[in-house]
Length: 230
Image (cartoon, rainbow, N blue to C red; front, side, top):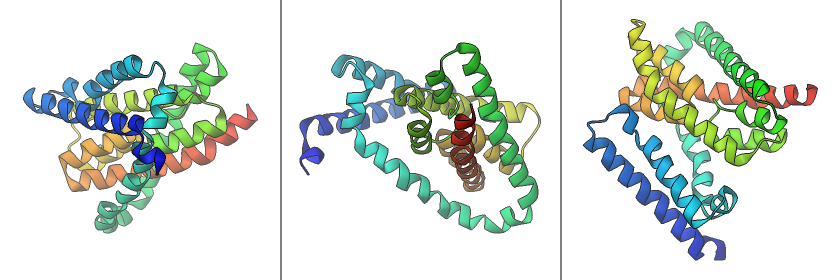
């Protein structure tokens, strides 16, 4: 209870909410310009606040524990729209599951290659979880030795870039099927992409939820084993 009502926790909670509302207002004022996405702008503002008020990410994370805790229930709640689309998912189960599995393997593979070229085992372990939603990514990093601050930053950056560029790239390829768009956003842009998918349609969001969940599960199972082998 003391931790819940401490001044640090209250300030961090209020600042995160305020920064998000301000960023959302700016996003609407910009006519929903992709580069003005509230997570992109809000992350920059929040980073400045952390530097000025805390000096390091670790202390801020302790004070903002409530948001990390809420990530779990929010992710589980995505099962509801998934349930409503269960018949369509079942009818195309084989191509859906094979596509998600392939994407879940390719994405960390590319990240591991880039991280290996960059050098440093901690960087390798942190970047490998880039396409997994934050609560799962942080859990994996605890087992593989990743840096929590870098993990969170890479995950958010990947999600924002994927949510901004994903729909435009898919449409440029002439693909109009919302199910495919949802799968692409879920595999590559996890929670941020899934939130963007729900802005397109409930069906798109449901398929993004499915892709995000399976990608996170496969990564959580496979990545620690690969890490031990290496």
